[in-house]
Amino acid sequence: MAELKEFRLPDVGEGLTEADIVSWHVKPGDQVEDGQVIVEIETAKAVVELPSPWDGTVARLLAEEGQTVEVGVPIIAVQVGSGPQTNTTERASVPAPAPAASPAEETTERVPVLVGYGVKTSATTRRARKVTATRPETAEIPATPAPVPEAVPAAPPERPADPHLPVVRALAKPPVRKLAKDLGINLDRLIGTGSGPGGSITREDVQRAATAGTQPRSAVPENGGRTAAPVTAASPGGEERIPVRGVRKHMAAAMVSSAFTAPHVTEFLQIDVTETMAAVRRVRELPEFAGVKVSPLLFVARALLVAVARHPLINSSWDEAAGEIVVRHYVNLGIAVASGRGLIVPNVKDAGPLPLPDLARRLQELTETSRAGKATPADLAGGTITITNVGVFGVDAGTPILTPGETAILAFGQVKEAPWVVDGQLAVRQVCTLSLSFDHRVVDGELGSAVLRDIGAMLTDPLRILAWS
Image 1 (cartoon, rainbow, N blue to C red):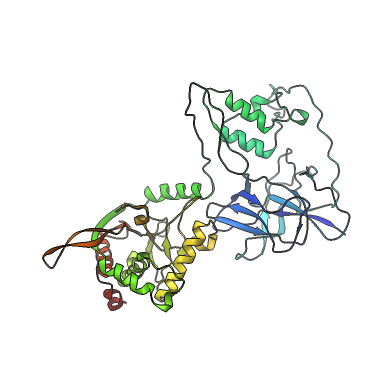
Image 2 (image 1 turned 45 degrees about the vertical axis):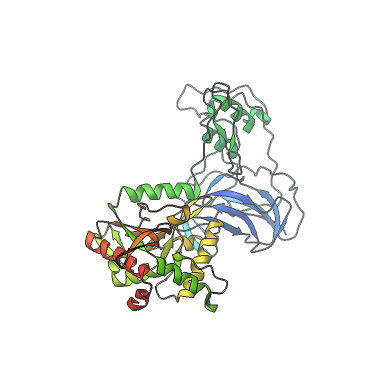
């Protein structure tokens, strides 16, 4: 006998409570297999592919592309098992839910989670659902849903004057409500003007309301793209509004928190890296590095790891609640990556003992995965110290902001030819600038200077990396 099961947005871990639907890989009527990727979601950490937990047929998609969904909310219905097939050519409404449970009602359910986090059985406390909900509370519903009465057009409702009477809400689908929120449109003001079935408000109604104002705005389609709304002759340039969500939203919050929590100090050191550049060229020819992209960043990473071993306090964090400094005797080396969705910092786990060829491969894999938007939450969690390579953007130096929870971040500037004094003679050398930002609650000027000086010495003469390892 066939069952119609709902797949809820899984617990994505790391304290995240919501995600955006990036793209569906299936549509109603498609056959899916257990483990087949059905949707891509974007959390505040990364873009993640979610697999189907069952074999079956897609009955309907319960969330639109571009929609923000809370953890635990159903996003897709799949018909599992044999039996009569339901009509899946359109996204259908689901029967109205049974009366909402008490806010304190405890239920035990099997919660699907992301690959790598396992599957857990947990007791959860459900909040009471509003009577306007359109989906059932249970995870499984009958194979043939009960018919939903068609909405009957009615006269424009009026907001009751008696505060004890229920307030009439505008009739609109979730994607339309999200569009109205992005455009700053109050749906209650459009009650009675909707052009959809039963007087419901459509996307076109919202966009017309937005363009009717004096300020031109941009319409945000369901796929998360940006389409400029028509502008008036009085404002030929118009405006573009970019929704702050997902990775970009997390990055912004993290940078504000870090900048206004930890007292930052940044020191600079200009060094001659001619010998390091020569070492990079020699290493590229070694068979151990075949198929691996070797760049100066590899030597910068190794130099930082050696410096951490010599000065462990630089690889620590400030525990405000406990009133303690936590010194980590392992290094999860973060590499700041500029992806299309914003700045992310994946890290190489336990990078300290890795041989140079393995470190090079891990750096390359992590960078390529992150730029492609495929970094996992595990890749982004647990970093202890970070490198940001601003040199790839043609920049000499900067004052990088600490990754939250870390004590130091090293910026590596561009390598360029410059006049340099060598043995009392002026010569043209390859030069770059290092910048080290650190948390002054943990690291004083002496320690910060010692770390930066040691890194500079190793990049000036790479043999020191061997001598100090």
